[in-house]
Image 1: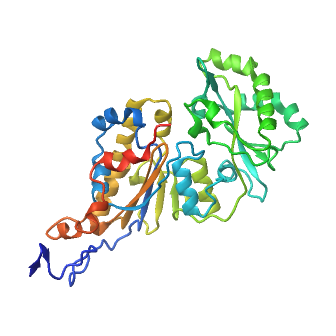
Image 2 (image 1 turned 45 degrees about the horizontal axis):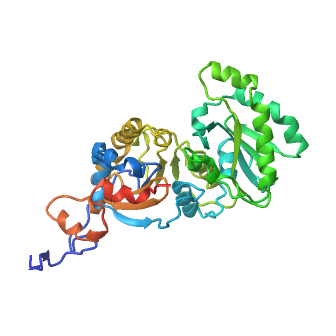
Image 3 (image 1 turned 135 degrees about the horizontal axis):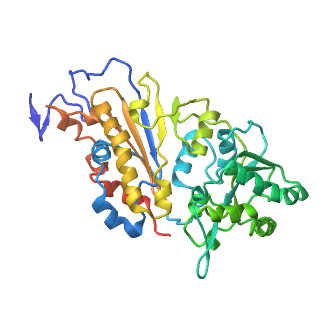
Length: 391
């Protein structure tokens, strides 16, 4: 074989060898696996320490051969939505700003599809710091049905007086119909979590009406017997509500034929797009049956938002053991055709894609790696550090 400038003649630099067919696994496979990983980039202020401790061999193996398919670029540290939500909305064909997450969340929570506008009214805990207020991650409330029912009953007269339709399809997420407070600019709770809440307060023509409603709920729940009992059990009191995600259902494209993940927006898109909802804790539990699959790995958000970096690192290591390393192995042996990685920090997302031929090894594997060499991240830090912005 002749060689010119270090490249064997007869080779296709896009990834295949001329006159030599690709070898594929002809058995059942997953044509494309998409792994969506929110909060997988450490916060900027702890990045140096985090990267020293973070070893994810499976993810690094995939990234070393992956091509950058898409990267979000902006300099706004205060976008009200989460990066993975924006990626999902874009690829499902939904508006991105404002992003109508609530009607899809309501679908996932058992609501009936309709044409009304819905916003999520989420019970939350707002903590009084020395000189400002901070909202904690709503997941920390661990709100169950009995407490939710009693708290909702306490505000029922206020809700009725204002003519608000409240659909409580889930203990921790309630839904308000027909835009009673107009078109408010509102942040997702996880976006506002841990920051001075003044920065994230709702904005719009009816923001005062919203704040009055919110304040009256806060006064009603202050020292409520449910909250007294919760504090006695070592739980956070439920002392406020947060409104977000307003919009109406529109036709949504499925992210994949099978969708795996408990995130309510993601699960709602699964319902709206008529995809098959699948429960799987590991890649080994996903059928290799010639259908595409998308999994949203959502466990890193809780330790990230509470700044529990030990648990955050352990969560990512579990992702690597259960998803990234098995995906790299299945890609290499032809049981998966391509892997898409949607990685997000607190402010940006990046989408990488790697195909089987790009993970190839053997005599001619180096030829395939010549394709787009400069666009490929070489380390975790290369891939993840642009995804977080100090706010």
